[in-house]
Image (cartoon, rainbow, N blue to C red; front, top):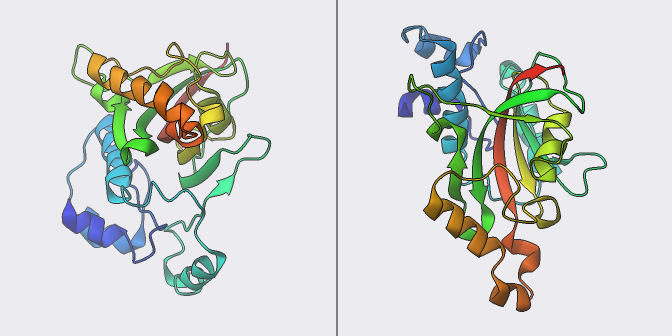
Amino acid sequence: MKTIIECCVSASATRVCGLLPYRNYNSCNSMLANCSASSSTTRRTLSLSLISTTFSAFIFSLSPPSSSSSTTSSSSSSSSSKLPLSKFFEIPDSGGVQALDLLDGSGEVPSDGDQVAIHYYGRLAAKQGWRFDSTYDHKDDNGEPNPFVFVLGSGKVIAGIDVAVRSMKVGGIRRVIIPPSLGYQNTSQEPIPPNFFDRQRLFTTIFNPTRRANGEGSTLGTVIFDIELVSVRHQ
């Protein structure tokens, strides 16, 4: 795993090589040629896990990379254009959701009313990026990870996830920094960690009355999600 990461990730913290099915990255061909084929679910799990783990330190940079560093990286990477170079941007009309497209999808874009399935890693910025939930910990009877399914625009999930998924394509992976105003407003909004202790720690941090009274409310509820759009089903 360490060798694959070193092969696929350049010195630029925003360059990503994901091990998704049917993707071919020239700079990693010699390494990946020695890897045996596995199921698409396993590859997808490895992809999002690899991206999230490799960039664990980068996740919590709440401001976009500087344009000068992006320009320098871009000019030095013309020979490896298949490794996408991205930067954080504010999703238009989102109310402040910052997004970083780690991998562009090639499928359809969902619309409100569609049933969507996503995999995600959820982290809490106020706890130094503590991971409070992941769909890869939610297993079915066969031990396979269960994606999280919801109807886009239904209000079932926190608004920041709705905003993020609405402009994604199936197969894409996006990191989003969701401000408190678009994050958890109450303890019934999904996604909710199934583990009681994780759930308690998440909500007691976000809704801590003492820290809110001290003026920390604007930072306590900032959450970071790595999201993969798995499928779209029209209702």
